[in-house]
Length: 121
Ligand code: HEM
Image (cartoon, rainbow, N blue to C red; front, top):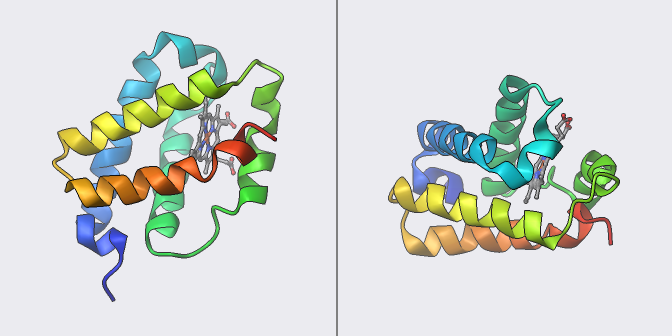
């Protein structure tokens, strides 16, 4: 079946994207406070699974799960600026990997739909 996932190149593409994305996240000063106690190896593997489900149309990235798994970050001051930074880094990542523009738009659209739950509103 053709999905966004197969279109962008399947597991190798997702792995490359998540690795590059997390290098960028780790280097972003404004995000460090949120990830300082995080096991980044585990986080990468969760993100790979999560992106795979998102792009194959399986709905495990439900708003409720995202709300619950990010609720503690609100207390640390998570806001729209941080969300914008994460979105910008993801966009840069996908562009650097030469993912076609229409697919980038679809991925960023899916990410945007999670903004309110992640910011718990
Ligand atoms: C569409 C956007 C996002 C998606 C799909 C996403 C996905 C995920 C997933 C799947 C997890 C793992 C949850 C679990 O442990 O079961 C997680 C945890 C986390 N996310 Fe996100 N996330 C997004 C946006 C953000 C943003 C904007 C930040 C801001 C800094 C962020 C910071 C974190 C942190 C710090 C954790 C917890 C790590 C820990 O438990 O130590 N995420 N995220």
